[in-house]
Image (cartoon, rainbow, N blue to C red; front, top):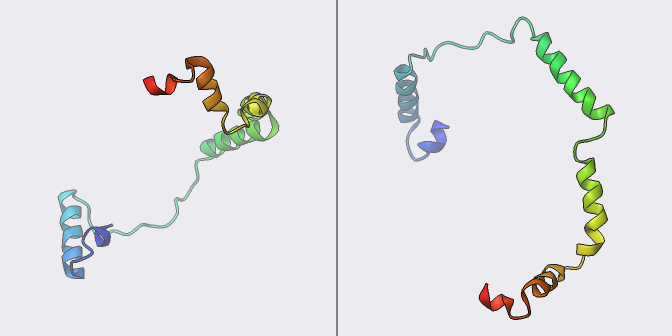
Length: 98
């Protein structure tokens, strides 16, 4: 990110800014990650798998909305339907007051 923020600056300037930020946060810039975590969180994996299993086997949450939308689609499929609906509610000159 520093390279994007300081795109017009030299690499030395960018490294100096990053080191200053890390130092101000008491972060040692020489510490590297030690690789993957030795053990996974099985409990979280179980929660994830359970939540995904419910969605796959059961009805999808949006199925009801899709069904309702499909029933009204023919009524609103005309691109001018919204304009006609407005004119029915507010009259032909209703556009002027809006």
